[in-house]
Structures are given as C-alpha cells and as structure tokens.
Length: 370
Image 1 (cartoon, one colour):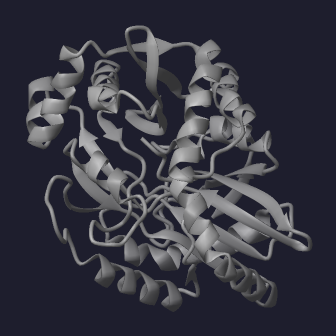
Image 2 (cartoon, helix red, strand yellow; image 1 turned 60 degrees about the horizontal axis):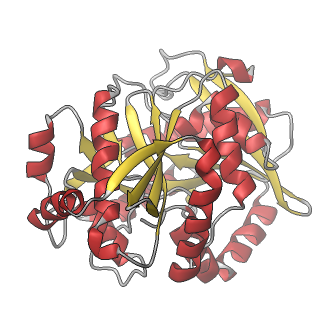
C-alpha cells in the first residue's frame, strides 16, 4: 500500500537519487518532488524498500509526467529475479498515480535493479544482454508496462569493490592502468581536494571538455547548486571536488559523491594538453583510495555504453572506465506506466523523433566525460 509522506521522511537504502538531497536539488530546477512510503511490506507483490521519491514536471504544454529516479529500490532481503517484480511495480505505480496530487499522463520508473554482466576487464561479450532486454520487454508488457527506450540515467556501469586492500585494487586493474597510475605520480602529478570556491576553475575546464567532446552539460549554476544543497540538506552526500595539478597548473578535475556506503563518480573534466602525464588516472585512483578510507564499500563509475562492441561515440570512455577493474552491471532502464494512453502515445512518438539528439545529450549528461 502506497501512502503520501513528507520529504523529510525519505530514507533510501542506498540510492543518492532517492534522497532528500536530490529532491531539494531538483526542486531548484523546475521539478516538484513528492515522497511516498510502501507501508505493507508483507504483500509479496510489493517487495520494495519503504521510501520513494517521485518527481513531477511538465516538459511540454499540456503534458505532465511523473518520474521516479533510481526507484523503487528493492528490499534488501529480496532474492527473486527482478523480472518477477514487474507485476508488483505495476500495482505500485497504479497506487502512486492515485496518490499524486497532480494529474499525470504517465509514470516513468528509472529502475536501479542491478545484475552483473561480468568482470570489467574481460574483453568481448560479457553476457546475453540482448536476451535480457527481450525478457524485460516481454515481462513489462505482460504487466501492463512499457520499456520506454529512453535512457535518462545510464543503464550500465562499473562497480569496484573497495573492501579489498589497495594492493588488491591495483592488481585488479589492467596492467596499462596500473602503469599509468604510477606514471602520473612519477611525473609529478598531484591530486588535491578543493572546496567549492574552486568550482569556477573546474567548470571552465569542464566547459572546454564539453566543446572538445561535443557533449551537453548544465550551466555553472547547476553545479554550484549541487554543492550548495550538499552543504545544507539533512540527508546529503559528502561531495569531493578533486583537482589534478602539474607544476601548479590545473590539468583535470572530478566530482565524487559519498553516500550510504557508495562512492559515485559524477562529473569529470580534463585539459587538452599534458594528457601524457595521465592526470585522469591519478584522479580516479586517489578518489578510490579516499572513498575506501571514508568507509565506502563500492566505487561506482556511474555510466558506460552498454556494450564494448556497439559503435558508440563514447567507446573511449568505456575503455577508460573498465580498465580500473571491478564488474559491469546493467539495469532495466526506464519502464513506463501509461495513464492517459493517447497523450502517452503522442509523447513517445515525439521522443522517438528526438532519438539522435537525446543520445548525444545522454553521452554528456549520463556518461560524464573523463
């Protein structure tokens, strides 16, 4: 049973995108956040974590959608295959639509349910990913849902186990990646944690990276808000702005969030010159070491293309992130509950016509350039 709650009640199991912090951040940029709770956890069709954040927005005139970022999370003890949860998801979605204070034409779940595809450093096919996609599509249709075909949050990522010691973390990398980490140190690259006052310097580098790689990024005001809300929100991540220097020259920088045991690499930027000094490798290694010392149990690279064999414009990013070891996991992606079917059909058709521009935006906003 789904019931409305206050935003202060949001207590995700792990997902940063289900937090009070994320609700506050998104409210600053046009979303209307609402909190709900699954009250009856004895119902086998609703095996979800109690807390749920739903964001509502009107992307075009006359059309309002509800979006659930990385939710609902599965209950910690849930062991059944994720596909079997879709009937419960349809039931929960129907109740959510009734409880929402705004009339929405659709409800979109961006599911965080993860399943492993294999070791990140293995080349070639990792799993029957296409077969899984077909299974998800069939299960969704059987439950009265639809796979949206739109990627908002990245469906695949690399997770690195931080419970191992540093020697083991290095040993799990590809040999060239270990070499590059050590090369950066030998050539005098240093990594420092900076406060939000250096955000303008980092953003100038990020903007140059976006121009070079032809990716879309948010305004500087957005990234400033990311840090401002972290400083004031009750349930906020520990954000780290890490900057790499050589002879006092800023070469690269990344933003990493520590939240409920998971460190997530959110954003990254790098200069065109002195790339042979490997500052990007130094940054990722220092971020992992810091996260491990802070008690995080996993380091999330946050987004990679879904297959090493796809002709993807971010294939270089795939190679970079998978070289650090860990395992590749995949998520179902966005699954829709149509409410007003005619409006929903028109919206999906409009999304399809924007498919190519969306893929380009997703490359910048979801995969993050390193």
